[in-house]
Length: 161
Image 1 (tube, rainbow, N blue to C red):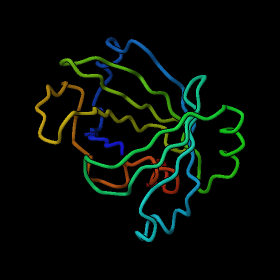
Image 2: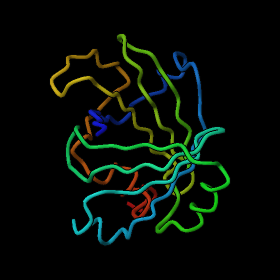
Image 3: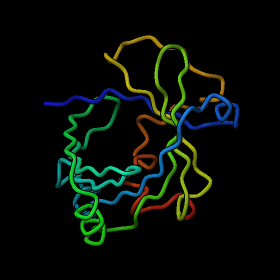
């Protein structure tokens, strides 16, 4: 079983841009019934993602907080394109910028389309109590706020808040 331990923060300024060493375009969508996810009837999200020249099918447990079960499987890009057409809700379009800070890899997601204007930073940790150096551009923590999860953004985009 894969476990993801992740913390998520709103980004307050562009100081991270100078440290970004890569950018990866991403398109993703969810096969789940979003109403069933919102109600808690479904316990995991099923995501399709095209990430640069690669594609993945991802299953992630629906739990509030920084620790979730996660399973990620590579799939052909053509299959991913076909699956994206079957997704419910909107598609997520974003650019992921990779930034090293304090010995950890931070992923800064700059959203486009219906979520334009939203920029969040995530850091994956080895344990829930791992100490880490929080960069100055990482503002309010939103790890426990469901509306900032990609699944929620697909059905309730940032530009409509």
